[in-house]
Length: 204
Length: 235
Image (tube, rainbow over all chains, first blue to last red; front, side):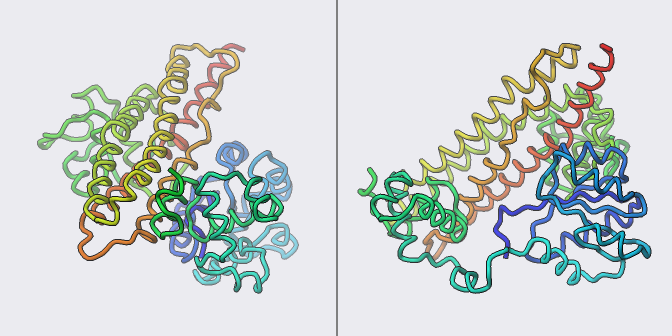
């Protein structure tokens, strides 16, 4: 399951209204993703849209795009993580399609499209990590760090106190934010208090 | 103009009945209720609101997906900015204080919760402060820049990037608050107050997202093309 803030902006460049809106509708039905389709009816002005809106994913119809357009788009000062997917409305050569990060076909099911997105966006961590890390349960170390954060200690102070590197503290903090889906320190304070990890007196 | 489900020749009343969430946009354009059977165009003209701008914004807000093609062509920027400014007033002077009052009531209704009151409010007030400074900056710097462009003034060193990319941070704090209440708040028994508060927060979050998207996808592209036309005219 993706975290709430993991919104993916998807720019769909496709001249057919039906294909464009149809793909938008399918994308909005994929579980586990928050996708924001943005539609444009062609590849004209695409360069400008890519630099302005910096989408995470670009879907284009190869019928209206040459290989040099593709190479050019990859070189733009847009989103460096941007993936480019072909919306293949006809038969194309494998060598052409291989230049894209993924290919969505006309007869793909929603499930197949989800699998293609998973291939592009699946978290890189190993399955072992995943199992140990899943769920919202904080480890004892994470609770310890959370309490210190809430009491107003800096990463450096926490590192010294717990004999950790600052880098490790930052990693723990990132994991805490991800597990709880709370990112601001004042938000974490409310969490810690409501869940009795700290007392009111602790940080007055 | 952005074509969509709603058109200028339709009755205002029918549009609102079809999509009540548009009421907030209607009020931010400064169009008062009491529409009788008047069409969108009639209502807009009676109140000095540019019809195409109004229709573009409501079609944009009504769609989940955004079409980017020439949606901003023919937009009247002064009219759009009036709409956005009213939006700022709505959030800062009306909705967020309203939510704060409800938050206080919901917390105090629960005996254990009363202890958290100050911490909760500090969190909420920090959030409001962030929204406030972002919106004030737009009111005081970004919008006047655009209104100057309309008069043909393009001060050196300024361009469309005066609009900061800070929308995500504002959304993030709102998500934090939502997660705390939905996932972690120890409520017991009757939680009508809390539920009502949460529905307000979620509604306000959605409104704020819509407002920000009008800026990102309508205002900013329109300002860019205006800048371009001024630069071209000077050549």
